[in-house]
Image 1 (tube, rainbow, N blue to C red):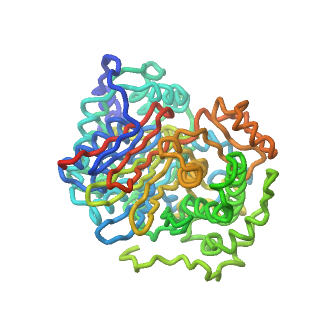
Image 2: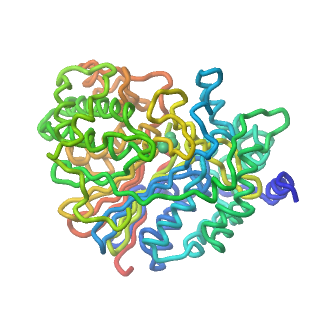
Length: 585
Ligand code: GLU
């Protein structure tokens, strides 16, 4: 059977029936005594809890939740993309990270997104084979399970296979995202067959099944990660990238991915970024994500202020200015560390933070600021960023989830296919969308984050685990492109400095300053007392294009009395689901 015939056959099996309206209320906050999980998807949180209840650990449960999110939230994540996982291993008392970011195919060059030396239009780049990086998710899950898990692919993929086979009710958010991406999805036959009906988004309440994705998961369950990176599934991906399954008359830029690109993909075990903030140890994701470094630099800057004793507008002004400075440095220096010598120790040094802090005016917002000279601080020994023990090994797209178990292991995991719906290309016969992660590169240089063969584009994902006195205090992370950094930073400041409980810290209006003249805010913010308080400092708000919401955070708080509280969004992104184990497990 040819690839397109397979696609057609897959689409014909796809069945749709109308489900009764959702009856159960979601639970964005839950406190218990064993393991805990918070994700944006009810089914994904249920999958994680089922694995914890079967005796799996947090790593097993995180992969189970992620695989289910790939079914229920396929426009933000899945096996066609990549991600970053931060894991606290309770027995070893150490934090490790797994970088399974997508890589540029070996044919890539700085000119991929240029025409006549000029950057091509962003949307044209997104919906293309050229935007697709070699997916890292399956290899990342393999490393996580093999090194730190207790269960097999077969066990942890079972709940997701069940959801893909039986189907799940299309939520309002799912419907809205499909509708917003109709034009992109219409370009590709495999995608419109799966997610559109007569070219339109399937209505809310429809039960959507994805037997092709169930098949892809079953093959991985049977043969491990090689089922994805070699053989028929790898060939189907290469075909979809190099000769996208185009609708009649549609045109997109093809890619040039090879079977060798897939077979050679590796996840990297990397040491976390560790920084300190007011007695807490903050562990975050290192390069190629800029998330951990930017959050740490901004916290270092903020640590020089007595935020607890300042009025809230002053605290928020300083938060915005610290974020502005951290973004200037992020943009100037950070990229894949295997290609670029970024001055990471300099950026993370407390002395550099003091120098950057001295530029902040307590009464006035700055405009766009230049980067500091972080190379000058490379030898700063005031805070050598070395782990205490030697490690054994080293828009609001995207999704973040977090899981803990009764042994005290914690996973903070952000993964993505980049834009909503990624490149828009569903792999024929396998039911998953391919990423457009290569558009995270800068399209023109000179810049450290320029496209190169085999390189990983700079990310903003910031899965974070915060420790106090050697024990987990809380985990936090969010989707949202570059606003991930500000959401994580603001939630930490809300929780630690403004003393908000985690649900309030997550619920609070989000403000995102990324070294621009204007700060991004959510609808309804402009005109509030909070906004006016900040306007007195000269802060201006981004009005076009204004984001509908910023981020969709998930957190777990480890309470001093030994209980654990999982916290998801109480109003954003259709409300998330927090679940916990109770005594007895
Ligand atoms: N591709 C983005 C990153 O790696 C995440 C996508 C998003 O959240 O919008 O930072």
